[in-house]
Length: 217
Image (cartoon, rainbow, N blue to C red; front, side):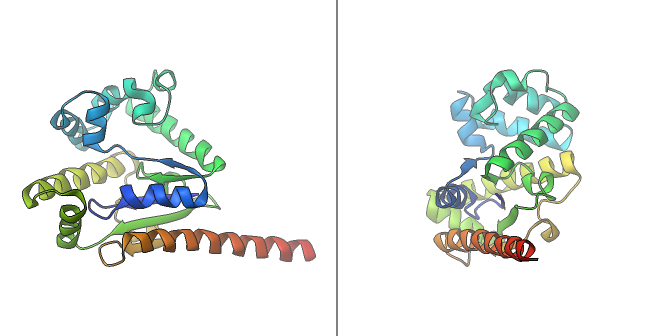
């Protein structure tokens, strides 16, 4: 099981699905405003305004997304019913993350590195890089002009910081949350995938060695 936290422009949306495919597990995406807006037939600026509420509380934000159910959270709408307040939303999402972790998954965002910090089989990864290089990478990969890229970076990174800070009282960029930190602007994204998969496989081999030693003892 892998959790990936990615700064805007660090390629999390490209790396995450490929890691999941290589490992043969489910990929759980995070809320990307433009995609959520398209799915909900809403304007992206409205979604961004709701995400901005994370600095003050998540009740309106949760109420906005709950009807979407599986579109955003991957959770059926009926399961989200009754979880429109901050405490119950957090509790429910945490339970879902732990449940899916036992089945094997790659989680992008969602504060998963914090929720699953004590999971013995988890590898926690942070993709980041210098701001200017992340902006350049977004412009190259996403075809955005510089002004749009900088606006999206500010909105996205701010929303993700507020989400983690509000719900978990933590800093999403705290290196202590992660086993592996990769500058995804200096390392090609395909290589990032290779590194993460290799790290997972290496941890599995270590656990197997430990099990074999225990059995022989």
